[in-house]
Length: 385
Ligand SMILES: *Cc1c(COP(=O)(O)O)cnc(C)c1O
Image (tube, rainbow, N blue to C red; front, side, top):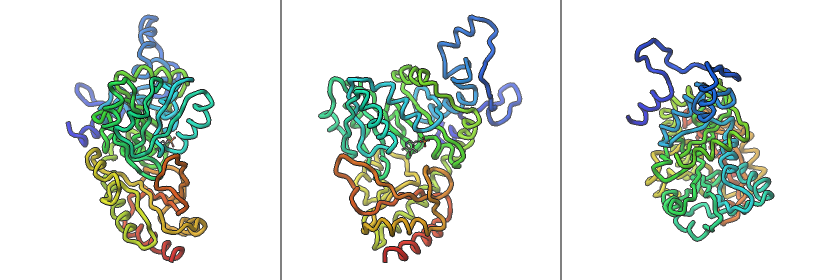
């Protein structure tokens, strides 16, 4: 079955011998009733994949988790109440006092906060590796290394890790590779083919796709499944079935939306690249991106989020530029149908495309790209000419 067919068919009932609605039911529950003690006890061994108690999910959550796990090529998935919850549960499943954790330097800011404000004080030795790392990760691995955490492309500056090379070093040593795959979704980066063991998604972004729900997903290999599931169980996360329903609904059109996001983002990115005010555009689908060849090798496309560095270091002008735009909303998150702008200030330990100059992050939505370009052109001319 091809990906687009999977997207249309996974995680929903099919009318084999009884009439059914196209979409799965929203099953709201705390208590699930069992016919007898034996079946109740048996369900306790399969939490998060079969009905047991509302906290561990109902049919609506299982439908979404199963659909995404199969789409990405993982063993099983677990639905989480936010993307950050998916990040933290995955890290907490492995990072214990006295362990060593390798984290890419271009990791999502709140993931870095978790590492600095909680894991490090807990006694986890967190080490950030250069965001454009591949097989050289071998030099950083120690006996107490418990996981390698990737985000490719990473937040803010969009460098890629060579995950295939990292996994080829990690797998023989039994070290799980985690990857925040939010930017690419299961459609544009086939995590498990590339050696990822735990794929993390802020489903809030492209899977939900309409800026109207918070959701996370952790997709696991068979070897990592019980460790992750047990940690989620310990922490007590629970995800609303209504939000799972919205995510499944969003998923149905994700392939189509991503195609248009890429088309629009490429047009805007190419236009920005040619502007005199712009120093560099950080979008892996551009030939000028330092990891473009790696992106072509490993990804099936690009989504609509990227950043660019201005030649100017006038941060006040940048704020006026953002304030003056008509079609780019100012706000957190991305992956919805609408265009957004933020002015990130990412933290880096390694040399990277972050300096005193203005960094602008755009989410290019599904509007007509010519309108978006006209909006940006007016703003750049007004503030930076
Ligand atoms: C937004 C985001 C998250 C967190 O997701 P939430 O649903 O907002 O908690 C994690 N990773 C990346 C790369 C993100 O962009």
